[in-house]
Image (cartoon, one colour):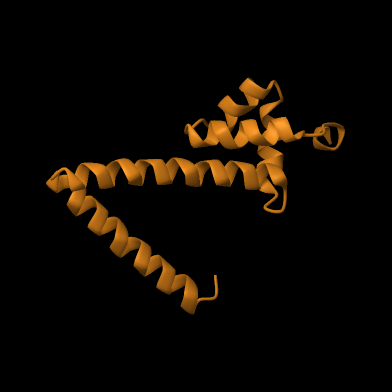
Length: 104
């Protein structure tokens, strides 16, 4: 019910994306935005909402930043990062194939 009473603004969406990119939890984001955690949680459950999209974009930015840092370490000769990147690539390739054949 509370979700119907609250209108997220462009500011909220940008903050959600930025905080998710910093790996904040939904609870921490709700506190920062001064909205109830239940309100944010309900908005995040709706895959068609701008709140969900902003949160997922932020999470992907975070993932990209981590992978960029890992690639730099690998280029600098960190063997652990080379191995880890190779394993991540294999996992991603497998997930992509699985999703393609299962129409996910």
